[in-house]
Amino acid sequence: MSRHAAAQPARSRAAATQPATGGRSAGAGIATWYGPGFHGRKTASGERFNTRALTAAHRTLPFGSRVRVEAANGRSVVVRINDRGPFTRGRVIDLSRAAADAIGMGGIAHVRLSLL
Image (cartoon, rainbow, N blue to C red):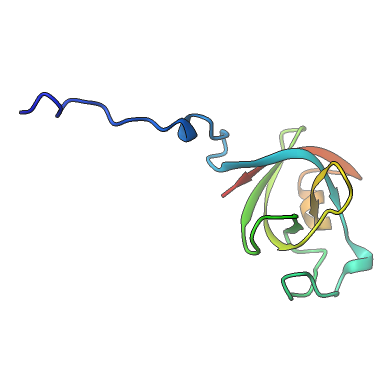
C-alpha cells in the first residue's frame, strides 16, 4: 500500500459554504409576488404565466432553473424560473401567487435562494 492510499480526499471550499438545503446559494433579499394582472400573458420564456403554478421571475438565472426559496419564517418552496424580473431595486425574485402562498408571504418577504 502506498503512503498516499490513506489520504483523505480534498474538500472543496464551495462544498463547505453551501446552504443547508443542499443547493448553491443564489442570493438573498426581498421577494415580491405578481399575479392577477399578468395571468395568461406570455412570460419572457414564451410560456403563459399561471398564478397557480410554482414559478418565478429572476433577472439572470436561466429559464427552467429550479430554486428553493426560503422565507425568514422557516417555510420554503421550490419554484421554476420562467420569467425576467423583478425590475424594482433591492428585490431578488418575483414569485407567482401560489409560490407566495406556499411560504406564507403577504406582500413582501425576506428570502434566501438556493439553486437546485
